[in-house]
Length: 285
Image (cartoon, rainbow, N blue to C red; front, side, top):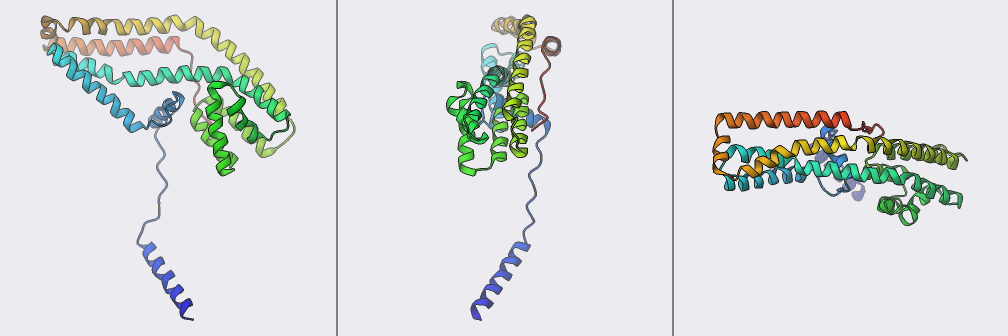
């Protein structure tokens, strides 16, 4: 009787202690900018890089450039203009790496689907077939599916492992393929290989069309980058002269730098928008 009374008394104390704490609230949904930065980092293969340190690195690079240019030119206006431009360099590098990696992954998806079809026809279940791509799949995609295999071996939860695979790939095309595999695994059926074969054919046609369009508009993108960077490179070279630094330290010089920066950003954005193919948005997160 005393044991039962002690257990009831202890349960009452625990209940009183828990009543003093507010229930845990779900984490807030990230805004669109945070999701976009996270997707860019994942697409560039920087899964371990957090957004906070990435922003700090951008600001630190701008600060180093500001101190260096100010020491060389003694011009506050020129140092500030080049420092602001330098803060955008990490973002530009990540965007470029993400676009390059997305192109490589997109080109390899038809081959990966062919390997997946071969594994399924050999009698493997869908989760095991996906994990096998970590060994026999396209080389650039093997680590994604190897991590999927590790997750599935540890948890055995197919849906959860697919969500992690989608987060690592962070690609609209991969989202569609993964959701098709999820529906097939949930609903079942015997038309999985037929569906995958049709999907691979559509992907190959889309890749051929996009490659032709990209080849035709690549000169526009290259011209936009050269036309935007050339004036600032010339400014950086001329800023080592004392008279140039003194001229841009005046009110008129600051106004010229500000107008030049605004015009450069607008012109570059316009040329890129006119010459770049529209990017697909992730709607199946």
